[in-house]
Amino acid sequence: MPWLTQLADVARKTGFPVTEVGGWRSRGHGPQPTVEGVVCHHTAGWRDRHVVVAGRPGLRGPLSHIWLEHTGRIWIVAAGRCWHNAPSTSPHHRNGASIGIEAENDGRTPWPQVQLDAYHALCAELCREFDLPASRVCGHKEVNTQKPDPHSVNMNTFRGRVAALLKSPGAPIKQEEDVPEVISLGAGEDQEAPAGGALAVRWHIEYADDPPGHAEDGVAVLAKESRWCIVDGLVKVRGLKPGSEIDLAWSRYSRDGEKFEDDAWRLSVRADANGRVEHSIGGQFGLNSKTQLRLRIINPTDAAAVVEKVTMAKIAMFNR
Ligand SMILES: [Zn+2]
Image (cartoon, rainbow, N blue to C red; front, side):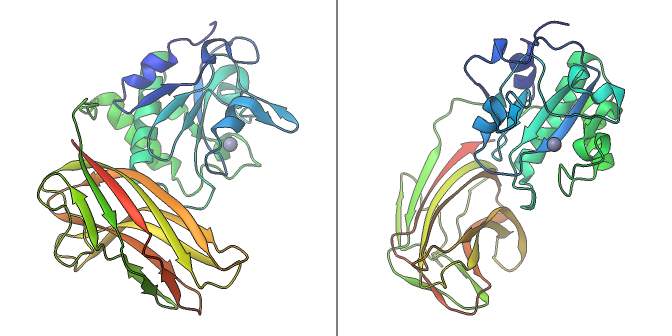
């Protein structure tokens, strides 16, 4: 088996967005000898595609064939052999016999559903292409006794999803070239995130083409029907103790706001030496007519913090 130059086309069959990293068709530690298995990893960091491509001190890149972004975007890194699993306890999952997927995650943050969906779909398409059963999809922690990744993922459940997709491929999420509805929101006033509590940002300013996208309470973002949302928020907070940690989250609630459903995307961030946080929080996930979305600042510290009025967000909603 030479260079795996079909990987980008295989990834596109998932319906998730795919980006080819320049030079991937000839990147590798020589060609890939065989493909007998797939190894699932987490990267233990964020925005670390460059590490997977180029390597780190003591280990030359490419480290794996694919980098899976937290948004569900699949980045094709290499077509040749990669250094992602040595020593391997399984002959089918050696570097020379397996494809490595490094999924962007710091090793403790809950996985966004969209990333897990992409992970399952990608493994299913790789199994289809290389004629492998779902049982050949393994977590790094299963084929190397020293490794913890991918964290918190039950690999039996994971393989169950892959097997189900192999049996009956679901309708892939369409990548339509449609023009999204875009909502731009601004906080407009300073707001307090109480000590030991949480604040859902109240939006005072909204720019939207269509009927307003947020509820009258100023907090909830509402989709009229089933929508795929790409969100990008910039959060500025002051008044924290230097070095203390708060969480930022895009959270889904029941439509009426009564019931918390989940944090579609959540990050921990640390205050700088001046007690400030300036951080962007992106994400990509579904909303529908039964849910609402809020941007929350969770402040577990014993000091109240101020979410500054310059906090803003842009939400692009696509048809699903
Ligand atoms: Zn690993």
